[in-house]
Structure formats: structure tokens, C-alpha cells
Length: 393
Image 1 (cartoon, rainbow, N blue to C red):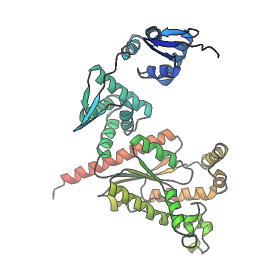
Image 2 (image 1 turned 180 degrees about the horizontal axis):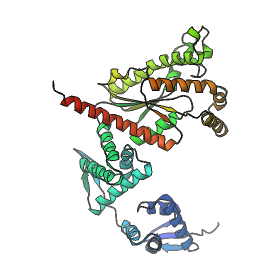
Image 3 (image 1 turned 60 degrees about the vertical axis):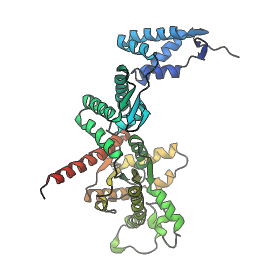
Image 4 (image 1 turned 180 degrees about the vertical axis):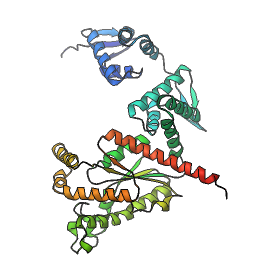
């Protein structure tokens, strides 16, 4: 058996192999970014390479020395302090308590429209504040205020208020339902999953899954338009279109009308269960659902995702065809003209019904834009309600 070139770390009777990964995470816990932590962990590993054992205390001194040399006394001291047993902090929420978690807090901060790394940094700052005060307990409202003040200090009033508005509506008695539309390949599914993750929304529904259910329930003879993709539905219809209408758009509209019945049912379910939900798909087209009908029951926020540059749009399917094995990207390329025509129609509908559209060139920017749209929309509703409450009878 080959002899290990890296030592065992010994502390009393405990012995475990040196781990670069564990070292990297421990350095990130004191504020280093991943690149800095990984680079220093490599340096530590090379420093102790060839030794059979090393005392845990000696290893810590090596790390502290390297931190002092590269990052200064404060960072070195932070690493030294982390060796002390951590203080357990409980968040008190009315009659119950739960352990403080940077991960959970950082996720809630992402609802303000911050990137994950920045949100985690804020959560880490708050943990450091509580630990420095040797707190064992913090109320939920105090933690919320600490978070608001940290965001206000680091990112300004707009970001801080977005955090508060989502915290309020995440536990309100009226659900938030986000409708994300766009043509095939615009990036709706990936966007929905990421937005749901950052906002802590557990229910994401694709309109294609709703269409699939309809395919099972209704035969092709009874409802042919749902038995084909949005861009190919026109091929399933054997009756003539009126007034020289574009057959691709005519059939697409008919498919949307059918699937919209299921979308409305999902919204009704969200309201009945008071459950936040994201519904995404090509069948989410502005104008097909009367959003005003839900004003007193739910917060409905609609957005359309597009790829405006035709060549870039087509190239997405070329790249996916080369890297994916299951989805039918060859068929997408063959029907790209129909897909692009459907996108133009959706954009026209969005323009007519004043629905926001986002050109999905940079995925991270699109995610942040949609999250900010959601929180800004909720804020606008609140402002409108406050103004209405002030109006004389």
C-alpha cells in the first residue's frame, strides 16, 4: 500500500487525515472567498507535505502565520478565535425556537435581489455580531432588524426594503403567484427553479406538465391541439384558419386557451392552500388570464422572458444539441422559425398588456431582475393600499 504524503492531524486521542476541503471551508468561515481559501489550503498542504503526523495546535499555528503574512493581524486573529467552541444561538419566534443558520438567513436575504455570495457575506457579518456579543438567543424581530440595518449599511435603502417586503409577504395570508412566460428555449425553466430557490418557494409548475396531463385525459380526436408542441400544434389541425391568419400563431393561441384552464386551476389551488407558487411555460401569455380577478385573493406577478437576438437564440439550440442527449434540440432547430414567430407574438401581447419583458442574455442578471420585479411589485401594491386608505370617504 502506498504511503500517504500528507500527515494525520492529531488532537489528544483523536486522529484524522489532513483534508484540503475541510481547511478551505474553515478559511471561508472567517471571511476569505473561495479562491483565497483554496489557495491558502494548498499552501498549508504543501507546507506539511511529507510529515507522518502533526498536532492540531501546530497546524493551527501554521495557518495563523500564513494568514498573518498574507491578510494581516485581524484575519489571523479571526482564525485563532474560531478554535473556541462556537456559541449556540437560537432564534426565538413566539413560542418556539430554532437554531440560527447562515444558510437559511442568506437565502432569505437573496430575496432582496442580492447575489448568493453577497447574501452569504451579510449573513456571516450578522453571525459575527451575535457571536461577538456572546448571544445565545435572538428574537426573530431583532434578527430581521439586524439584517435590515446590515443591508441598509452595505447596499442601500432599496435593497433593505426589498428584504423587508418579502419577509412580510412570505408569511402573509395571501399567496404570491409568479407567472413566467416565454417561447421555447428562452430559459424559463432554469430561471423559475433558481428564483424559487432564492425566494424559498417550494412549488414550481411547468405548463408543459399541465399539457401532458391534458394529453392523457383527452384523445387526439377530441382535443388535437394539445397533442403537439407549441411550435408544431398547427400541424395537428385539419380545418382552415380564418382571415389568412398565421397558422402557427392561430394554433398556438388555441393551445394556450386550452392550457390556460389548467393554469387558472393551479392559481385557484395556490389561493385555497395559501401557498406561494411559480408557474412557467410557453402557455403563460399576457392577456389570456384576467389578473384583476385575483386582486383580492393573491399577488399575481407576470413576466415574459425573451432572447431578442435571433442568431443568439438559434445558437442556444445548437449548443444544447451538442451538450445534451435527451431533449429534442434537433427538432427545435428544425422548427426554429415557428418558435421565433411565437416569441414575436408573445412580445406583442406583453407590450399590449404592459407586462414586463426581460432579455435573457446574462442568466444571473435575469434572476436578480425577476426577483427585484417581484419585490418591487409587492411594494407597489402596498403603497397603493396605503394611498387608498388615506383617501376620504
